[in-house]
Image 1 (cartoon, rainbow, N blue to C red):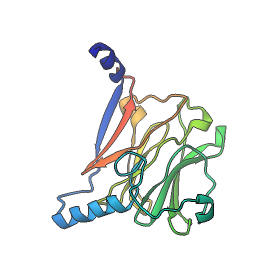
Image 2: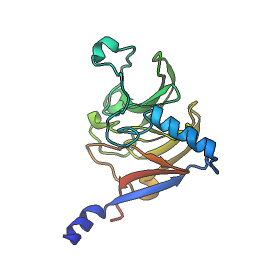
Image 3: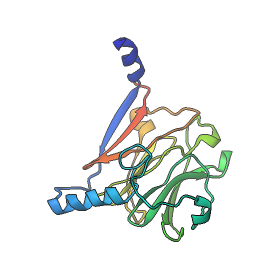
Image 4: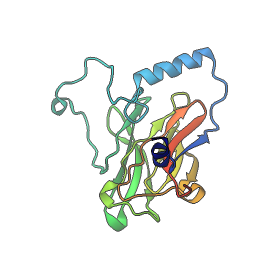
Length: 200
C-alpha cells in the first residue's frame, strides 16, 4: 500500500517562494490580518478551503441581486480583498488566446487593471485555460497567480509586477491538456504552490 501511495505522490512537487515583502508582524498587524481574512475571500474556495462562506444575510436569488458582469472565459474563480475583485480567466481562442488576471472595483465592476499572458509551449486544450484562482496576501495585499503554462507571478494591489518565475523553465513543471493550475496560498512570507514536474 505504501508503494502505491508513494508512486502516486512522487510526481507532485511543492514549491515555496519567498515573497520578500513581509517582515516581523506586530500583534496589532496580526489582528488586522485576521480581520482581513475573515471579511474577504482571499483564496480559491475561501479562507478555510471549503468553498462555503460563514457570512449571513447573503442574497438568495442571484439574478435579482446582480450588480455587474464582465465577459471573460475560463473556469477560474474570483478572490476578493480590500474592495477589489481579482478574476483569473482568458480572452480569445486558439492563436489569439491570452490568459488574464483582471482586477475590478468590487462595487462598480470597473476594470482597474489587467495583465494578459500568451501561452507558450503547452499542450492545453483551449477551453481548459484559466482553471484556478489568484490568492491575496492578507498582510500586504499582494496578489499571486499561476498561468496554465506555468508562470508564477506576484503583483501588488495596483497591478505593479513584483516578480515572475517560469516554473516550466526553472523546475520542469509539466502542462497537461486539462489545464487546472489550482491556486497558490500564502503563509507568512511564503507563496506555496503545487505542480507536477518531469523530475520524478
